[in-house]
Image (cartoon, rainbow, N blue to C red; front, side, top):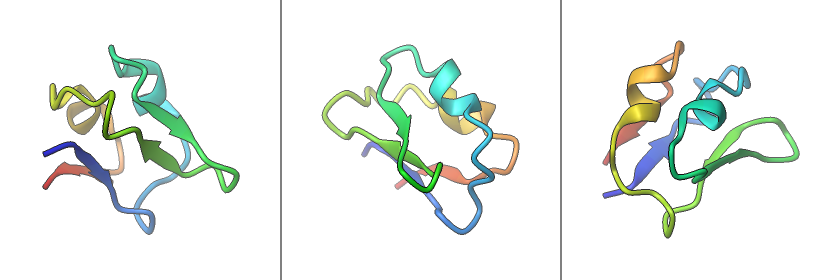
Length: 58
């Protein structure tokens, strides 16, 4: 399953956006990370990079 962002835990740092090798993550209008499920390859790079542990694989 693709990565999932917990909106309450996301601190809008953009680390996941920078680290995602597939460019599958962007920040929405509220600066919260959003995963494009079609681009996500489930590599878990974002999960490991997120300093607030807001991203998980569900």
